[in-house]
Each structure stands twice: as structure tokens, then as C-alpha cells.
Amino acid sequence: MAGTTFVTTMKPFEKILQDNKEWAAEMIAIDPGYFKRLIEIQTPEILWIGCSDSRVPADKITGTYPGEIFVHRNVANLVVHTDLNLLSVLQYAVEVLKVKHVIVCGHHNCGGIRAALTNHSLGLIDKWLWNIKNVYSQYKDEINALDNEDARVDLLTEVNVKEQILNLAKTSIIQKAWKNRQAPDLHGWVYDLRDGIINSVFDMPAGSKIDDIFEYDNL
Image (cartoon, rainbow, N blue to C red):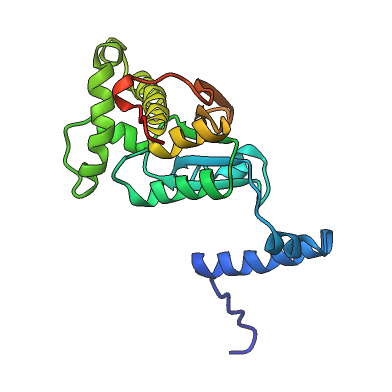
């Protein structure tokens, strides 16, 4: 009909594709050799183990660029010794890329942490959240002593990060690298959604002592 204007609403996935084209064109305009360099080499010094939460993309909150951080993400940034996905990423990062640092970064107001503090069944993910509940059981006296839910979630977030760092140190992958090249250092961080700041909560320099029973003597 004459005089009628039709407005086409772009679907979310279509907008992502459109935004990608615009971003690629902008990068080439700024730096014509940008993508050529990315193809030729990948030498990150950091492995980032973060949460799958859409609010905490590693590159955005650290101000880094593609190629600077090797990234693995899962619900509540867990290091689980039966998770072949994580272990494969860890081995590749440590033994092939030879990263110098491994960071486990949690974040405040994490849905996985908050869910693990309840007794509600959520289906299959219960099996994953069991790992967080196990951390809670180790620190429940300190956590339960806090007088509000947000504070309890914050503390569990922090001690969960600490325990994931310890889980990393217990792997043969990390212990072998510590023995052979005195790297990588392990860092536990928490990103605060309220102000955008990352805070360090626990560190293990390469070669740090762990419980004797978890040390391998034949690496």
C-alpha cells in the first residue's frame, strides 16, 4: 500500500551476524594486517578458566585482545578431575602453548554458586553443582555464620575459587610442568559485577607445596 513503511525486525542471531560483519570491517579499516597476524600465530601466556555466565567474557573484563588469553569456561569455573574437556584444554595450554599463568576467575552473584546453596533439584546440573556443594561443606561454619544470603554467596564464590586452584595443583599436568619448567603460576580471582573490578583471592606460585598424598613421584 502506498505510503506504508514496513519495518523488518532483526532476530537476535541475525543481529550477531550483522554486528560481526561490521566489526570485521572496522578492524580491517583500523589495521589491515590484523586477521593475517591472528592466523599465523597463537602465543598466549595465560590460560583463563572462567564461568559460562554471559556477563563475564574474559576479553571484555580484562581489556585484552584475541590471541592474548586461552579460554575455558564452564558453570561456576570448576576444575573437576573427571572433566576431559577441561583437562584437554589444560594439557594443551600447559604442554603445547606453555602458558606462564593459569587463572581461575569466579564472579559475585554467580547463579551456579547461588543454586548450590539451596536444596532444590534442578535436574542434570545437580551432578555438576555437587562439586560446589562439596566446597560448601568444607567451609559451612564460616559461610553459615554470615547473616545474609548475598554475603554467603560471595564467600562461597571466593573459597570455591581457592579450591579450584588447589584442584589444579593436584593434577599431574601442573605438577609435571612445575618440575620441568617451574611454571605456570596459579591465580585465583573474583570479578565483582557491582563495580567491574577483579580481586585476587588466592595464589600458588609454581612449585608450591601441596598435601603429600596428591604429589606424584614419577613425573
